[in-house]
Image (tube, rainbow, N blue to C red; front, side, top):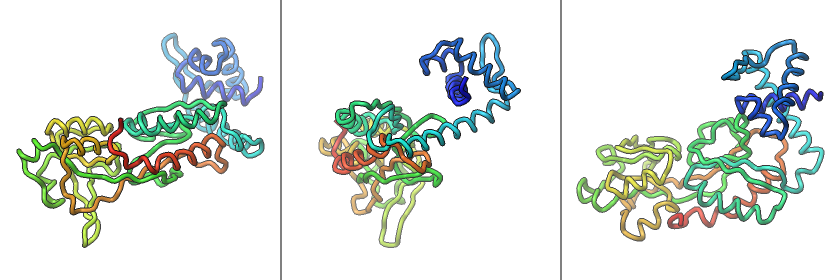
Length: 302
């Protein structure tokens, strides 16, 4: 049996946590998956898994081998992309990770339009608060909001969206309107983990950038959670206008600190370091940048 096929089966089984799960993903039988792993272990002279009737766990050798296998398979994918012209026409499966709100709205809409153009492509969208381990999770593109903290990631800026600080009229009537950024220290500020840096609200002043460490009664990695808390009078939020613009227009949220400029929210696409980008990744990045820029400041997410 081909060793590369065995490595592929090994990676899938390890990630699935079972022979049946890995075999299902590859469209082969459990018996065939088991045969591949046994032959691979035989050629290596070492066990890759500790097997019991209830569990399947990597040995120390298996954990080390898994990391190497993933890199080898990634290198092969890159070589094939460079030599063949998978570069020219998007095909296969494109896996995208995105924060819940922008992922379920703008990114999904862009993906739908992109699929209409490319019939040989499928898209998986994972909604999560952070990009996660792109290589380990098989993610091609992750959408990231705010300042990039991990310089090891390859990033492309897609768009910016204005940020505003706002609260419900009830909250402002009860606790007062903050006049300066420093006043926020005495207020309940609802924190959105999906926007980096966490707990740090930044304002541009004549003397430079002012950073205020905030805290409050609700924090979440989903912007809509703290938006709902703000609408119910639990505190102030700093959110992009594409999320709260509609609430501001209706008067259910009121903007404060309007005389202080907020650095706009940057929207990036991050992806694993690869010398050769596949056609599906490069084409979607180009499409998304053009599609997203005029929509990033939209009022509301309807």
